[in-house]
Amino acid sequence: EGTTSVYSCKIIISPSNKLHISLPLYTNMIPLQNYYSMALPPKPFSLASTDQKIKLFKGWHARDILVATVISGMHLLCVYAPFTFSWSAFWLAIILHVITGMFGITLSYHRNLTHQSFKLPKCLEYLFAYFGLHALQGDPIFWVSTHRYHHKFTDTDQDPHSPLEGFWYSHFGWLVNYNHLLSKGETFMNVKDLERQSYYVFLQRSVVLHIYLLAALLYVFGGFPFIVWGMGVRTVITYHATFMVNSVCHIWGHQAWNTGDLSKNNWFVGVYSFGEGWHNNHHAFAFSARHGLEWWQIDTTWYVIKLLERVGLATDVKLPTETHKQKMSFKNGVNDMSFQQST
Image (tube, rainbow, N blue to C red; front, top):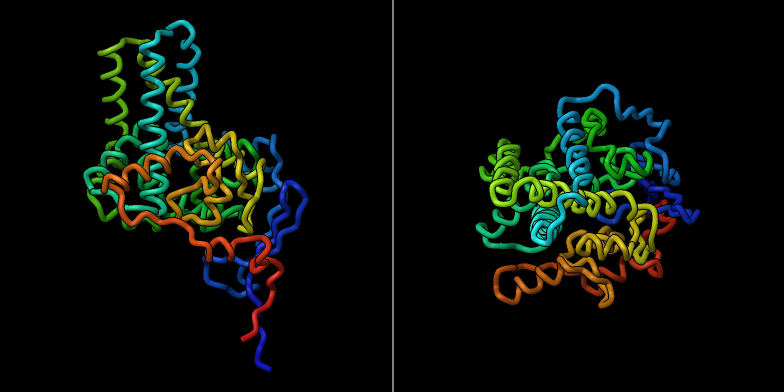
């Protein structure tokens, strides 16, 4: 009795050759004829997918030239690292990596601003976001918008940085292909919450000024060695921690949850990126402030959030419940082979 409605599904063949046919859990169902996505196994060592005809070094947008110059410049500075080593420069790089990479990117940009996994007093929220600006990964509005699109279109042709378009494209190539990013429909209309705040608009318009200011301060206090280690080495370490989450964690690792995408838990990236490498956990429970859900899954960012909560600075900290976990379990089967729904 009743009618049968057919809804959209996602078919994904994982690198382990497992076929996943799934329905999105956190999006509204839409008619099958309006949406169909089949993700083929990524080609780990191709620069870009020839099927998509992505040309990384042709038709560059002005923004691509700036980004490529900055990324290349930071890597070139690392060449001088052995010749400018000192313990003060070394510890400067480590400290700035923690400040900009963990407090700035993983805690602020990612878990606080993008997913709103917890709340902070505005002064602290703004301070941590300012730290993230100095990771040289863009202003908060750009970073948050891109990541929200990634979760909305994970491992489809609208994903800003899916490894389906090549390992190196997902690792860094998408950053120097702004026109291709726009062709995917990324219009930055998903960050109204940040655009309503003049502070984030100010950072967006003045990002280069702040980077130059930090570089000038480092030069004043430590000369060229502080530039090499405080800007070059530190930034490159932070770059690849973030880049590996986008590339490695959608190719190599273990899937603990039935997310219907290629996200993986990768222990090495988990340790390297302050807990971001437990990526399948994250895609299963994007709202969660904690990514390392098991006691042995090292999640440094979560430890800091927990400390902030205990001293009353982090509030409304979100975590998955047992009900959430049961829904995302492979044993549950809710997200498998669900082509039809009776109404």
